Image (tube, rainbow, N blue to C red):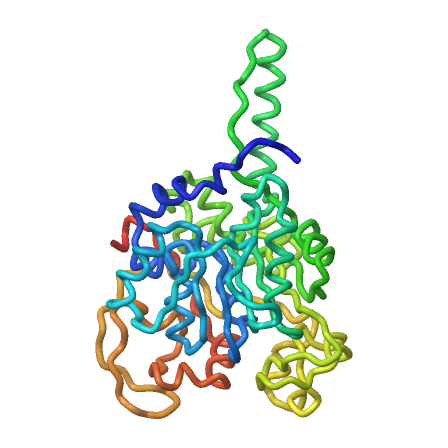
Amino acid sequence: MNEKISLGQKSEIWDDWWGGITPLSEIRMWDFYGGRQWITKYVPRFGKVIEGGCGVGRYNFYLKRLGIDIDGVDFSPRVIEKLREFKETLEPSASFILGDVTNLPYPDNSVSGYISLGVVEHFIEGPQKAIAEAFRVLKPGGIAIITTPNKSFYLRYRYMKQNLSKRLRKLIGKQLPDLPFFQYEYSPKQLKEFCREQGFHVSRAEGCDLFYIFNELGNFQGKNLAPGSFAYRFSHLFENTWMKYFGAQSITVSVKPGSVMQCFLSGRMGATPDSLSKFDVPISKEMQKSPLAYFYTKNRTVKFHKKYQINPSVSPGDKKVCVISGNIYQSDEVFENFGFDLNVSPEELKKPFINILLCNKHIQPIWRKRKNVE
């Protein structure tokens, strides 16, 4: 094992990083980091879900508002303290726990879902231990959604330049100092294999977020992402083709197999292994006739349902009419329209049937720079 310590495994590094960032700013950035179309589609609606390495908790607060029973786990005491302070204004029922993703404070076979967004790549020894721990705590039929940085077009280009620079310096007798390790980038194929090694049935292993590559190429300023720009048109044209394999993120959706598994659509034990030959998630025979089962048939494209809105002004809270109930409700000043293209009241959003339908047909991607949303 390499004796070097990853900077990404030092809590003080994340204390400094998250110290100047608020949950509010991260929530209002929405899809600055893509992948919400995957997370909201596959996160279980029944049973406990945990996010290992939750950072400042933007997905915890968001998913909690959508009616999902989720805990955020992070190893930084300062981050957990900060999150607990923000609970009162963002979501009092949110739950945050101090813990280590390689030694989670949950019993075996106890949770329905596990989310890990840009965490496991920080272990210099590899992601195996963290993924194995996710497998341990999940119930049979439990879903793990794991993302890491991908070997994207941008990173391949950057590393090619760095390697060329190193060779030139070597020729003239100059040696660059070794930089401390921070993270790996894993391709979808590599991440899939890591999950399979720990016992998971991997339903999806793909790349996503071409849009972020252009954000990197534009020096993170976003000036090149305006509607009608080359980056905007290219990203929307190719995000749902084979080219997404070279997007900024690798993402896997995996199932903990078992002879009897928790049904994704009902939450009841009763799905059998043969359901995974037809669906990405375990679905019991009685629920396979549900109209929602259609969204989880194999090889369906996972996508946003509208084009990106770029740096829109933050919507103030106002009165809206729910398209489902017809009731008037007060929209949220923080979560705005909850990232959907329909007006749906908070009460209706928390109903699993409606929630799953919205997340499979009505996600509106929004891209905002962090400094524009404080």
